[in-house]
Image (tube, rainbow, N blue to C red):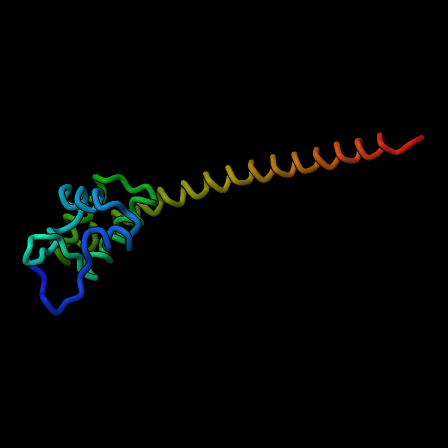
Length: 139
């Protein structure tokens, strides 16, 4: 596949910077079937279209939210098959959403513990400072 001369495209480095991944990761995504074959310029270099970058942004969010690569690959396969897979894609996202919500709940619990410990240390520091201040006052 080659890209159209009038379409604005990005090099692998530019696309990588835009989506926050390394050029190596972009190439790996393509090798793993997560990305459809990327268009090439006349010199054979990858050229990423706006649609390619949007797809990469979705993959980045899926990965960042903990979706396993095998599920990402399955999603990419389903998407390439077209509209007859809409239900399967929705189900895949619904299952992932439940895992994300469970992880958020765990993180909220962890955050409450951190807040508790921070408050505990702040109170202990104030008490220590008060004791030190009272010890410095001449009797």
